[in-house]
Length: 192
Picture 1 (cartoon, rainbow, N blue to C red):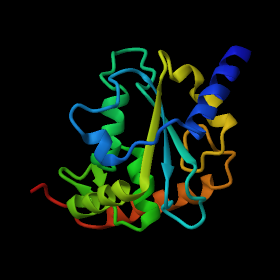
Picture 2 (picture 1 turned 45 degrees about the vertical axis):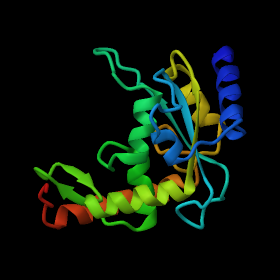
Picture 3 (picture 1 turned 120 degrees about the vertical axis):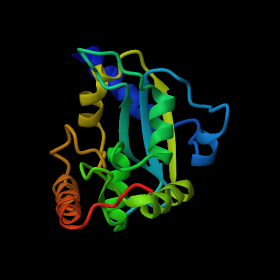
Picture 4 (picture 1 turned 135 degrees about the horizontal axis):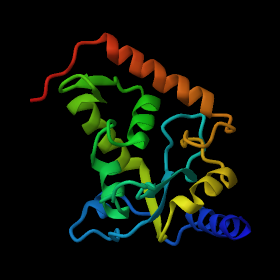
C-alpha cells in the first residue's frame, strides 16, 4: 500500500504541475502527440465551467484503460483523451459533467437509451473545451492500481467516482441527476 500511495502521490504532483499542457487542436493533430499507451491524464481549465471552481489548476483525473478482468480494452491515452475532446456525453463522463455545469441541455438520442447534448450542444461543448481545457498525461502500465489513491490524495472536484468526500460531489451529482431526469421527459432526438 505504501508503494502505491507514493506512486500515486508522484503521479498527482506531476499532473498538478506538468511540463506541458496540451490544447484540443494540438491533441487532435495527426500525428497526435498523445501516445497509444495506458496511463493517467489530468484536465486543467483556464476558465472553469463554473465560478465555484478555481481556474488554471487540476480539476479532473482519468485513466486509460479501465481495469477489465473479463476482456481486453482497446482504450489508451490517445483514444481516451481524443474522445474527451471530440466525442459526446454518452461516452465521456467528463463531457457530461462539463456540459451540465455549463447549462447545456442533455437529451436522449437515437434509440433513446443514450444521452448527449445533441449535435449543437456537443459542438458548443467541443468549442468551449478548445478554448478553455488543457490536458496532460503520464504513461503508467497499470493505472487502475493507483487510481483510488490518486483521487484520495488530490482535490479533484470534477471526479465523482471514488470521491464522495469532496465538498463538490453532492452538488455535481444532483446537477447531473436533474439533467438526466429532464432529458427523460423530453422527446428523443432522432439521428440525422
